[in-house]
Length: 392
Image (cartoon, rainbow, N blue to C red):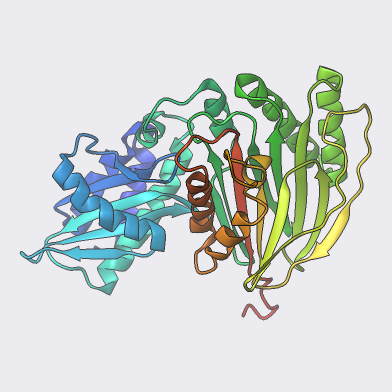
């Protein structure tokens, strides 16, 4: 049993990318004496967890697993469910670099002790890494995630995302797109490189496939500049010129570009349009005031300037697109005027990964069960602060 994680890791490395769940099942049964296993993946809305090994799991069996699996997914802690006969279902988070993929279920003949739980946790970590790597080589896990057909625009947007969350000793970061299955132009992107976290949020102009294509060009232009060593100004200017010379000012992309020095908490920003940044410090929610500059692609050879501000440990920063801030259901004031501050305060005790879902649910509720009229992006950054030099 000591070699359990190594046995499973080797089985995962040798398995075809679409057969990871089966390979893990065989290896876990052998290494831990498990009675059965299953893999549950989160859907695009992060509203449910769905089985990979047994997609046709009967309703009663699915419901029996689902509530406990959701608790594991939300808490990101192992959860034990002991049956009357003494057998135990052990639920473990499938998480890699802070991105929550789903939950691994291992059914054992008896409740595991700390050593077995620790081994099972390591196995879940190895499976999560393998699933993340395999996601570009097979459609199997994406098919399990989708509960309805994605529009072409949404297919492009989800493929363009860096992930939905990432963790670091200095911060946690999470984002969500809505409407998940038909999102068009709104988007977010991030990259962690040494002491630099780069984050961009785009409020794509237009709708549907045309908006998605415009966003894809903009994101890739910013990535090209960033990967060539360019800072925020170079990223903004290259993207702006790329969009302008393609559309001659007829189309543009409102974008917020942010760079966080993870060693100091110093933030540099270029506000090129409408995404809104709000900071929650304690129970106080207030906008981060930045000078708004021209959206990317509106004019030829637009020049951008940096602005700076400082994060303090414990700060929570939200960035939202106009589809959140300016949402205005019939007969109501815009969501950002007052309702949004209330929903942000409601997330105080939640991790960033749960907070983005709470804000989206509150937004849907504000629309009184009607569909969102515009794409919506919510990104949440929790700043913990850099570690002390002694590693404490």
